[in-house]
Amino acid sequence: MKAGKKDAANPSFEQAIQRLEKIVAEMEGAELPLEDVLKRYEEGTRLVRFCTAKLDEAEKKIEILQKKADGTAKLEPFEPVDTAGDESDAKLL
Image: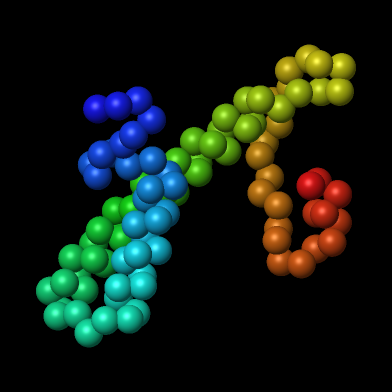
């Protein structure tokens, strides 16, 4: 297998998200037999768990990488930005 390329059993986060989007579109737009809908639902559930685990990993890495202004390391918990329209979050960008 080439570096940077993942197979279906071990997708990258981005590949998993793309597949989830495709599953949703297929389930919304087509008249699929119940058996196919159930297969896609099961696959989607596995992909959601995979993506959640990857995001949890990323949050832990962010906690470890937080630093004080003077350059010394300081462990700070990751606090996700609330994107529900709070304008105070814009200063973080």
